[in-house]
Image (cartoon, rainbow, N blue to C red; front, side, top):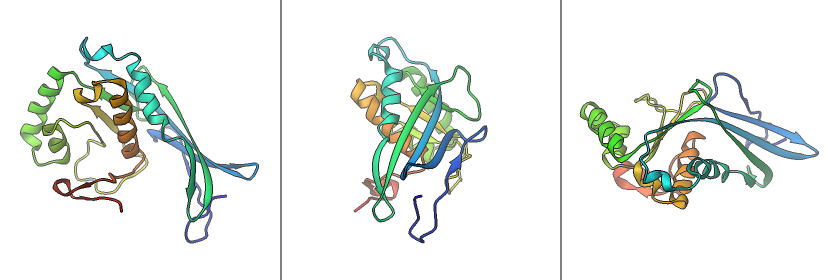
Length: 193
């Protein structure tokens, strides 16, 4: 069983109706596993030229699945992470809506949202036309596993399959509760040494 730096066993069982991303830490045959499962609802306004990316939903799911693998955690303990993805036909509180915006919808979204929320982090991301993930609840400082989550993919993410997969991987890290590791003084990110 994985133990934290305090020596106490870590227990993770975040699954069910109120969790947009399910997680369960388990042990089998002396090995530790973290199972992550996401149900995605795709809300797309993509235009024909953006849809030329073959299997664009697969690119997004592959980006999410890149978090799977072997990790060393808490001072040398081995952890195997698996990521399971599925698509749902209707949004629900236990799914993550992924908004895939066309050029026109992105401009419309920016003009409507930013007019009233220019100083917000969402407003800033929209002004810079960067893809982002959010709870859509401004002012929430700490991450919580039961908060709703959204991924907004701007048109620049759909340049090609590689860019889309990398963007999806990055945004899924935020969905998991990880902050940005790069340095960006304008956004207040100190970076990771």
